[in-house]
Length: 312
Image 1 (cartoon, helix red, strand yellow):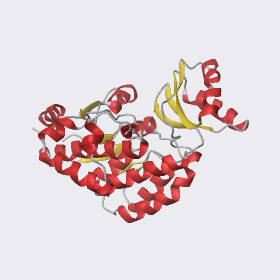
Image 2 (tube, helix red, strand yellow):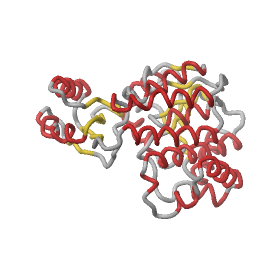
Image 3 (spheres, helix red, strand yellow):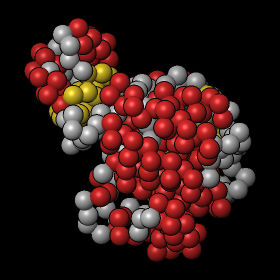
Image 4 (cartoon, one colour):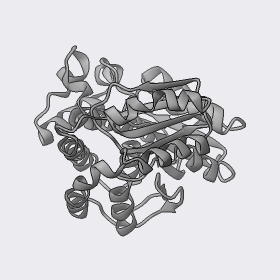
């Protein structure tokens, strides 16, 4: 049996219509939609299947993505009960899905937790014009150098997401980020583009969200891990409630080291399986861990394909 890392994407992977194939063809999916919706007072069928503005609001994006990821993972586990993960790993929000898949938190609790996390993040950024910018074609050290120089001038900008070589997302005050667009290009970036986001993730701006998030996690997370979860903050694996709470609280204000996390585990696994809408991490992994295959479970067809490939 292959050693497998089960992986989960973060915000940005959402689309209208995600999860509909699961919903239309699985009673388990319908039940999970209903239970999750009851917990946070959201009609997920309307949120996910009809055009609306809420889907891109952080407080709703996060539970929606996590729910579809947990449905994909649950259906896979139902089909392949003997397959065990060597590690669980996620990108930003995806680390909460990884924690849920590990068994350390119930999926309904996890939906509420990330709904509240999203609200806390939005609250921390209210009325301050926060944002994020993707930098393409520039190495990490060069991006970090620009950020440090800007901080020395009093600007609020920080590296936030280390996605792959030549792709790093920075976060901070929107005006400060915009003022650095040409600076990044002068340093050699092919592109420096502000993202359509009103939240500055993984930076000091989210400090006010840390204590309430930690309190929520204390009441929801359990000391029960089927396999270790790889931390976005440290790139190391953890498997206790105490570590989960400390690291996911710290994750709010520290960069996501996704690239480094994949590099840290690639010698210890033989296959990655991504669960949830789309194949965002599969695309990143092609650049990070070229020698390892990444499969993805995003609908009934891809579920069937993965099951037939590794479970039979």
